[in-house]
Length: 264
Image 1 (cartoon, rainbow, N blue to C red):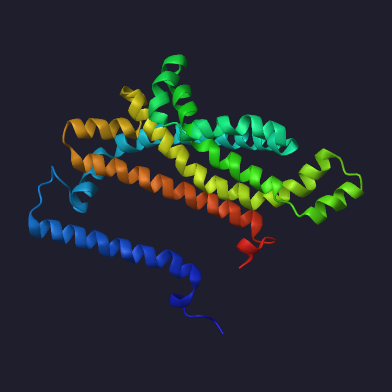
Image 2 (image 1 turned 90 degrees about the vertical axis):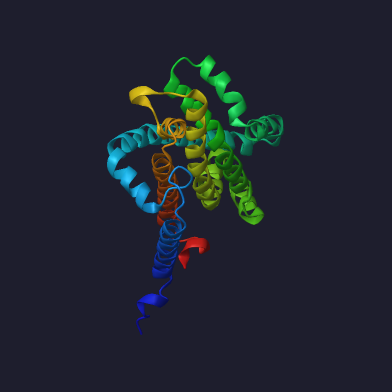
């Protein structure tokens, strides 16, 4: 028997947040109209929509600049984080020597080291990519390393009894076992790459035709143009949500046929 549309889990996951969001936006609009809240304090959703119509071309141009930095940093984080985790799993000594430095980069605020990176790297775009990559790399590195190490001891013994070499154990046992951990790291890292890109743009203060969304937020703040500021913030939030959904879809596509976390 076919389930009613409202009782389907996929429909609930999509429809329920949308309904709640629409209710909150309506409450925001009506309450602020009734209370006559000044636009220079907090704009109404209708004011933000008007800012989108007025500054849409500029905002989406800035979004592309920020998104380009985010995707480049995310790709670098995946590549470097995965390669380093492969190295760590080969030797506990190597992991013990270098993991503390990875943690050191993670716990150091990017705002504190971004000015140094921007001074050392003359190319502004490359400097922003490096800053964002440093923020995004840690979840990929730690999750992948954990997945590569969390193999079944019986299966590992079976591979060793059959005289499998390190490469065969890595590619045929450790990597498939690490995929759920790896994709979990990607879902976290994609958002951190966006955060790192925006924070690095704030620190760099880049302007002109190459300005990202962070620059638009700064300029809107200086001009007390809060609808424009909220519109830029909304674009950043939507971009992070789209990246997370894309990583979740990729994870489901790889894991749904064999891993219990996605089979349902």
